[in-house]
Amino acid sequence: MLTLDEVKQYLRLDTDAEDEYLNILILLSAEICENFTRMPLPEPLPKSYKQAMLICIGYFFEHRDGTKEGLPKVIYTLLQPYRRAVF
Image 1 (spheres, helix red, strand yellow):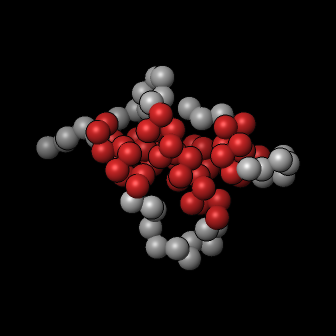
Image 2 (cartoon, one colour):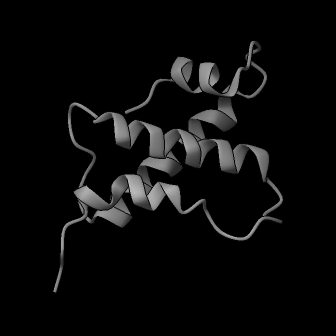
């Protein structure tokens, strides 16, 4: 799982004002990854997973009002090798 410090460094945040919201986004990004791959988060977390989660967090951090259409497709590209086929 990503740490709050990793997320704040990625977003270049210096204050604690958004910590509660960022913790929600960390959980949300993990859930999105698990739903797409159809698997729990791997331990340790591969770099491509981390990047997908950070991009997801950045997206929701910048677009809180939902005005942008859909998550960036690169998230799915990064997670595709880990996706389990379910029939």
